[in-house]
Amino acid sequence: MDVKKIVLAYSGGLDTSVILKWLAEEYQCPVVAYAADIGQEEDWEAVTAKGMATGAEKVIISDMKEEFVENYIFPAFRANAIYEGSYLLGTSLARPIIAKEQVRIASQEGADAVSHGATGKGNDQVRFELGYIGLDPQLKIIAPWRIWDLNSRQKLVEFADKHNIPIPVTKEKPYSSDENLLHISFEGGILENPWNEPDESMFKMTVSPENAPDTPTYIELSFNGGNPVALNGESLKPYDLFAALNRLGGANGIGRLDLVENRFVGMKSRGVYETPGGTILRIAHRDLETITLDREVMKIRDSLVPRYSELIYNGFWFSPERELLQKTMDETQATVNGTVRLKLYKGNCTPVGRKSDRSLYQESFATFEEDQVYNQADATGFIRLNGLRLKIQSLQKG
Image (tube, rainbow, N blue to C red; front, side, top):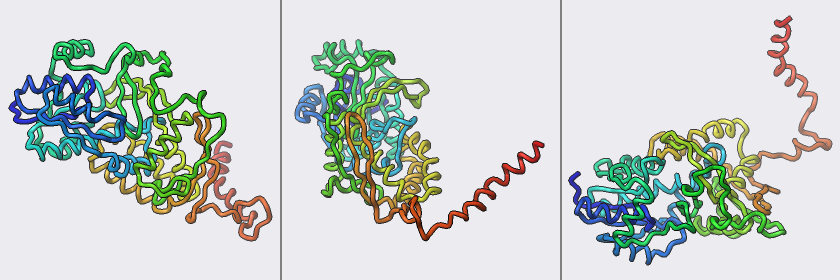
């Protein structure tokens, strides 16, 4: 492949550090190392220094935190996105914003190729490359894991040692992790055996439920149009609000998940996740919808959630079908305004109150006490009509 300049999605970890050096040697062209700050804890000065020392022509760090929350996390949570009933799509949502900025930088730097560190077995290769194709199909795509002979972690370590590249994978940290504001994921190494319980020392965002406070924490989360806008009555910008939810959830042991999921490429994979703020947000959002969404609208919306979530998981964020579903999901959120009171306690997040100016719950209709608005005798005909087909079926059976 004839390549003039490459922009690499770079984290400073083992894979992309080796890839940076390998690209420069293999293609004999400048490589721009680009990292997106989407809320992960990182020493960006050290990442920049390491990138330059490893052979990058330039290292670019893009602050994407606010955009990540506002344009990726919040839209997905407006739709109650969840994959296979439990995964809140932390990695899946991060890939399209990284790819979008990478394509922008490629144009800015005059690069004709982009590269990433995803392996040929995982979902991320699909997510990155569908993003590149959907945004700029003229870019050449280099996926080192699919073409080089460094086909194991051990070979990567040996390459790194040979080129004096510091590596973060050690006997004390025998797994790989991916971090952003929404979550941290852990895969590989000791976790590849699904029988092995994760070691407590692995977790970063959450305390164990056993070690969480012995008294509950109560919070109030307010929404407008399906988006969280205030915490305990204080209006906050999207990033600040979500970061606060992470702190509250983490301190109370909320948001840990251990599962075996179905990758898009066909194999099953064991992953362990921490998603404290996202767990609180989804529970609160769904609870508010119970009083603000019409029953039949909710049924239709809920029927679309698996498909919408699968599109994100599989890398189709920039597809017309995801955008169509997003518009549909957002249409349902016009009335999702109000406040939910939540009890956070030892890994549990429990709604204990909700209120809204757009509430469809009317105490005057639902009360068990005497009322003047509901004629209970009307239920007789309602039941008879709904039971008519059952009656006919029973008569037919003789």
